Amino acid sequence: MLHSLKKFKFLGSRTLKTGISVFLTALICGFFNLPIIFAVITAIVTIEHTAADSIKKAAVRFPASAIGALLATTFYGLFGKGALTFALVAMVTIAVCHKLKLDDGILVATITATAMIPDFQDQYVVSFFTRLGTTSIGIIISTFVNFFLLPPNYSPMIYKNINGLYNHAGLLLKRIISEVTAESKEKTRTIQRSYRQLTAHLEKTNQLSQYQREEWKYHRHSEEAMVAFQLSQRKLAAFQQIAYHLGNLQYVQTKASDFTNEEKELLLALTEEFTHVLSDPTHSINERQFEMVHKLDDAFWKWKEDHVVKQTGYRHHLPPQTILIYELLCFHDVLEELQNMSEKQAQLVKKCYFPDQS
Image (cartoon, rainbow, N blue to C red; front, side, top):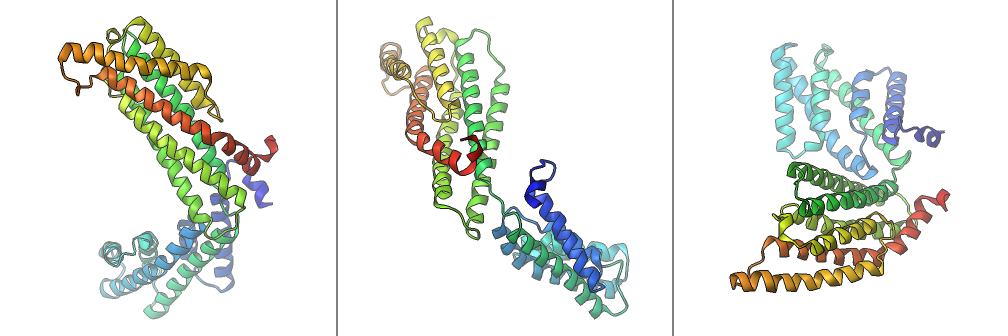
């Protein structure tokens, strides 16, 4: 039933686990006639991306909650139920938790401390242990639910993101080289915005990879799934190099007049080949691309000799034109590495994560 509900995009696994945690927490508190609201609030904010995070942060949130409840009891006894009490409880709870390096528990501790002030009973000790007990129930229930129910598998999302990154990189490369060879320039801000989106997507995918590594510390996984994941990480590492070269290319200051018509045609044709390789899941390179890269390599040394040495007399000076050609040659080297690793990866990922498409 849970897996059926999970198929609806409206209800992700984390949303479902939050609902289940809240239900079980409220059920247990109601059974023992304990205040439900504190436990439910805690259950909501303590569902994490991975079981590993839940376990680590639960160990921090419990002492942080105890500190918050103790401070709330203390300040209520000193100042009563006033605005000053709320402010002092919030500030001191945050400060103490931060000083004790309980940062992951600050939110839960502050919510617990401030929420318990309006409902204080005359017996402060009873109120303290009641609130701490209900908060602990929320932490324990959410941790168990996160660990045992619907363990997340980020690998399909990671592989989908990697494909999206390579497609995005191909379009961005096309846009950059088109600007180089065109008389009318595209707005540089548009290219820079696209590059920022690319790096943000890359960062998110790296974060998902970290989540998957943490998750596998506590849940079983097949050897094939591990091999496929490792290969996807190699592909992600290769993309880091591609992002680096794209970052350099977007800042190369060249004009269309810097290249001959033959050179511009070569750059555009090679860019089309690069884009095709980037969008292809197997990243296969045809012989035509190797021939064009060989021509570009010759053009690099010839251009440097004709335009740099003869005009400036300085062999160490690299103008923007040679930098652009050099970056494209490096780009091709990365694509060759991709071709070598991707065929095996595509078969494993399809078998492990998309068996219905076989």
